View (cartoon, rainbow, N blue to C red):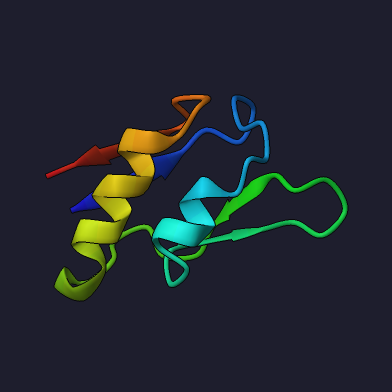
Length: 64
């Protein structure tokens, strides 16, 4: 699994951090998401897929 985060699209809702805190974080100054792990382990797969699914800006892409 490979995760791509388009920070230019991110609106800083924080949904990704709530769904997968080991994979995503937010910048303190503006709330924009930060990708911590481009290839998360199997234990983070479900949360990461959920983060991509619920992202209001559609800024997260998950590929096999």
